[in-house]
Length: 308
Image 1 (tube, one colour):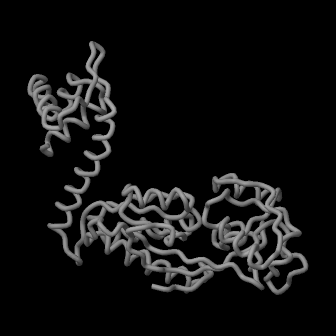
Image 2 (image 1 turned 45 degrees about the vertical axis):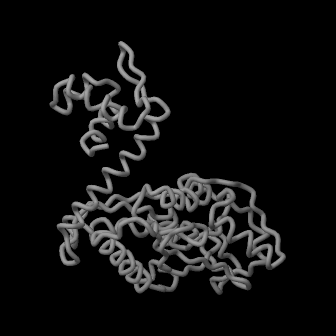
Image 3 (image 1 turned 90 degrees about the vertical axis):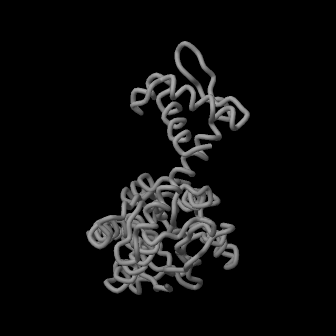
């Protein structure tokens, strides 16, 4: 296989025809057809089902799409890393951030990365914990900031931040002037929580099991938008990091009480695959994320402890 063949193959797969791909690639159709035939001969299998309407990927072709994308991306990463250094990193870095931290971190991370590292192309994704971990494990991103690093294999882990969880909802502070709530009192509140096996749900239930205290998890919701909607409308409260709802808390629309006796804590870590190239651009973004989390802790936006 040659790199050009993989590029041509992806274009044919994308547009669904050799003629259309040849026009977009600015090469002659017979030459492109020859390259695809040569690639199929080299692999010993058909990649396309050909018809008068165009081409359709075979099962083998569908597999090659995934591998070709990874191979070409790794080539681009290598090229960018070779010509960059620690002072002026360059290249693309893709990061997935657990949804509970994305709302707080992204508004600082994007502009600061652009200011400090103008030749780094930063791509940020947010996802609930299970989906974020899967993106890392599948090699879809270079780096992740997630709370369930212990669930992954063959990864390099940097613990970054330890946080406490709060009961957040409408009117929950009434009668709790201390700003805290005993774990045993949580049973009095209807809760909305992510479904299993999302990290925050597992943390909550494990603590309840160890404390031998029941919880009233009345609703399951795996999208941040609807979870926020339910809290804002007083339908249910949630056990979450305080900063997830900082805007509503600052406006006095919601209350937050830190859960104690026992408290619920979890650790967010920077995670990357062991066998993934650790480029200067990736190292720069890692360092910036740690620095910004420290800043957010210092100014009280994040309620927790920096570990890295």
